[in-house]
Image (cartoon, rainbow, N blue to C red):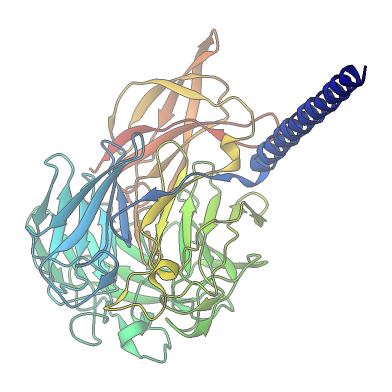
Length: 533
């Protein structure tokens, strides 16, 4: 009997062990499921960061290629530091659909494209000017799949800004980080003649900040916006704003101050409503380096005609101060502000601002989103992708040698952010067909869309470096529903005729629903080329 009792006791113990194990596993599974559901519910409100994509370089400059949606990015002459070399640039092309990364050492143009001027021209080519090789111009042609040498600048520049204009020319100004010091007045590239021409009356002096390094930093990274009648508006980073005319020898005319704002070097400015001429200006610091960042926020509204003062509205500031941040214009008109630092300190993440914010153009308020897993401060980038997600990356790339642990300073990766509008659970519209992929200014096209459509908008393909993206702007288009059948609707869509508002080039067209909860949900974009007159 004693043997049977022992067996029975062991059986009871085994049963209890198995029962407890099952209960533990069950409870664990329930806990994990609850956590996953909670995370998904939270993501609906705050978005989600996807897995990091490792690169062989720190991506300090970036451009979305309009024909394929692939991403061109580059560093300097070295993958994780920069020097004075002027012969080559380390570059990659990243495919967001496959996550494939192709490396390239660009030697054909003999151009170190670190700290350049950058914009996409009216044919979608990436135009890179100056930088470490101060007088060079390099152009990436996606059709040919290669870099081409462009005409030399009239004066060497680095840390300058440039903007593509309504007639296809490219304007640049400032940039004393490289080349001669000071006097970096504007010049313009004629893509047909393949020449840069100095515009002596487009003076750089009025846009200088009061940086303690003087013109070396004071004329850097101007916030430039092409506008009507051959004009360019400079919204910052200096407190003083200016109009530039780019015909003949040029014109410079003061446009008043940006309200009570201070100089805001390495802040951001985004034209989120081009039809209304509305620009969101956020953040920055009084000096390029070693200065506290600000959370200042202003709306600058341009007049219908240039060369008169804009209207400036001061808003309640961002929730976090930021310098070195990036601002990305979303299809809905919202602006995603990522990264930056509370104190401007080059090549350091100790002051990193990790919580992104979403600006709502209807309520003029900011909403905190999902915390960034990787700091993105000095030398970071961010751009909108055609699937309506945002690609961020970089940070670091020190001068010759980092002064701290490189793994804490250099970020050799890209990371995608999925905004809340794609996690809301609301149906996403789908563009089934577009009648034309090339349209003139003032022209029309038709969209066949599956699902509910509240509006149609387009955002220009863009490029970014050093917190500057002069390409991005959004236009809400006039669209008329021509008929609906079985959940499909045909829409007639009109393009504005003013190239100062709709800068010619490649644009992403989005169909946008209102969403059941009031959250606008964009489709995947169709690409359209707006042709200059």
